[in-house]
Length: 516
Image 1 (tube, rainbow, N blue to C red):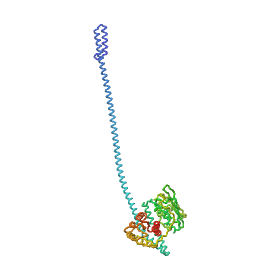
Image 2 (tube, rainbow, N blue to C red):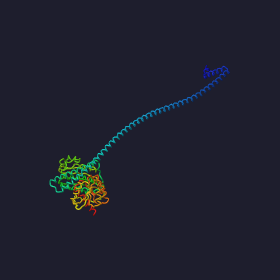
Image 3 (tube, rainbow, N blue to C red):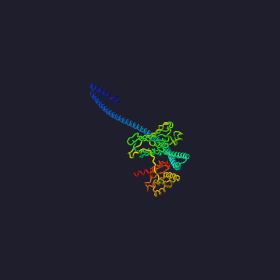
Image 4 (cartoon, rainbow, N blue to C red):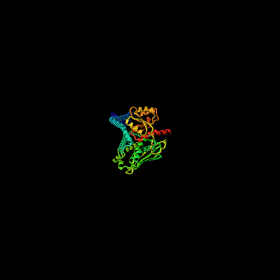
């Protein structure tokens, strides 16, 4: 049974017992046979154990291989899982990225559409604004041109009114006639001042004015303004005093014409509202840093003064102290508006101190630049020069017949002989034949203009003084007049004393300088 089941240990034990039993029984051959069986069984056991060991070793190797293979497969599975995860993550991220890109693309498209619509709207609005601006500019230009044309057309007959009035007043009229003529003269002067002020305000509104930077002498400018207002001050029994700081350099850079307008308005106002009193003009150096100067100006009077309520609006257009003041003293109410605007052009502001019954003080500061003192110091004095015009021979170039008569009579009163040229071409021909002491040249004429005639005359005669008599605004044409060859300019209608003064200066004063 043990043998049938390969129970080798039991078989071995049985053979050992049989061997011992046979030896004891003396059955040595049987004992030897059983002993051989023991050896054979042991050999079988060894073979089996060896086979089992080899099998176990093979199993171990196989097991290890299987474990390694399982490990490799698990690693591969893990790697595949990770790869799968990465692929899924990549797919998710790619999808998210595509979604974001799509959203951005849609957003950009919408924004671009909105931008295009906005740009179209802005373009349309800009075109509308530009069209409105162009229309406004054209309207302003039309207004300016209209006023300039109207100004010229008003000045021409106004010259006849004021000129004839002056001539009639010089012909010893009766007291009753004199009163009427003075009223006519006042109305003519008022209308002239009103036209000038309206034109000035129009240019300021149209931004056509700009401050120039040219050489000038401040003391000379103030002296000339005061001298030009001397007759008005004399008629009003008003004294004008100039307090000029001698530390102010004589050679400055600025706009003398516009400064003169400021001083004429302020000093003229002081004279008008100060009967039998005094107007003091102060110019003081407030600060100097190298060539940069700050000059303080003050024009004060001891006239009627301005109440505090009116001081708030006195610089507005068409504002005056009161209706009674307007009736008594006249004026357009634009003078101080012009002053304020002109000073604004220079970057300055005007101040006012006033008290009823004690007078007014207008003050401001100007920043100017000084240069080397190239102009000699000019002493201040009120000049009232009487020129001897007798024997002079003057050519009047004028196309208006009434103006010809008035100008000729005004010259004849000073014993001046004159010839008349009806247009520019006649004037050029007459100057070629005759040596005149002076030429009074109208500007607007049929055929060639006064400027063109002056240019032609200067080609063959550079010495004869030519004074432009014009009804157009000086601001627009002054430089072109001088460029054409004019020595001076007088605006029509003019005050007789200014007219004679200009003729005397350009004939006698120039001759003195040449002889010196």
